[in-house]
Image (cartoon, rainbow, N blue to C red; front, side):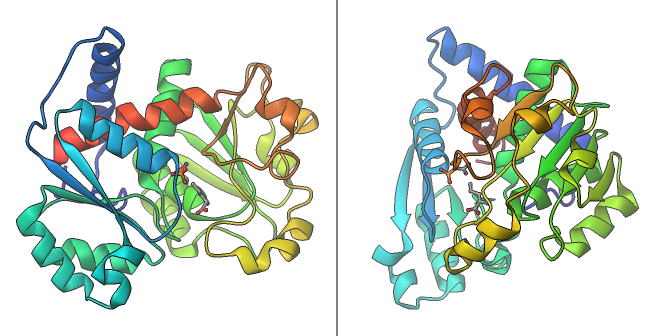
Amino acid sequence: MKKDLLSFAGMNPEDFEDIWLRAARLKKMLKEGKEHASLKGKTLGMIFDKSSTRTRISFEVGMYQLGGIALFLNSRDTQIGRGETLADSARMMSRYLNGIMIRTFAQESVEVLASYATIPVINGLTDLLHPCQILADLFTIKEKKGTYEGVRVAYIGDGNNVANSWIEAAAHLSFELTLACPEGYDPDQRILEESRRCGKGSVRLYRDPRDAAKDADVLYTDVWTSMGQEAELKERKEIFRDYQINADLLGVANKDAMVMHCLPAHRGEEISADVIDGPQSVVIDEAENRLHVQKAVLEILL
Ligand code: CP
Ligand code: NVA
């Protein structure tokens, strides 16, 4: 495993398996009430330029459970918000902390921070990628279906950070990924090409959600409007109208298809209430797994 987790670039299948093996062990220990203070005395700084519920809580609780602590650093309240450079922040924070988790806009900011930091940097979401989410999602698929190999995942909606990280994962792991995105809202072209070039899995892009959902083992979606795109809300609601996971679309997927969503969800937009709250939905287990998988990542990197 590399020093940082900024994307899945440079990771090999063993790195993924190592994370999931540890995550399963940590989850079991937690359920059995066994303490495991492997990060005693360690501190994680968490820089947030965007809102969060799951990422903040799971990293903070994760550090606590591993015997360390996490500092919530809202960039508005730090000197980063007043223009202190990422280079200075990274160099100086490396003297106080043992790791940094950052949620921000540009992927480049995360890369710059990591290049100056002498401690591990974890990408907690950028406009381009959301690797921690997909690590937890694939762990959930393994847990529920026994494996991700050969599993067909259908992503319906915006070609955003979550979609891009799914595509990146397919470059390293042998699952089938089908996506349906409206024209003009495709995933990142460079990531798509790179994944197809060195892909272990297969990635197919459709316009019609029914084509992507056909025979899927997992139906996955995310919000139509991501953080930072709020000005496009009205327009996006119109464009994405037909990109909803609902009972009709679920009918096209495999009978035992699992419904996933990174959350937060907007019922009646990207997913209907009956489906997200229905028996095939695993969204709460999926959210729980953010904790176990990130603890594994923290243990490995810190
Ligand atoms: N899925 C996810 O990252 O949720 P938060 O935005 O609440 O952290
Ligand atoms: N695509 C969403 C994911 C939220 C977890 C966003 O970036 O807002």
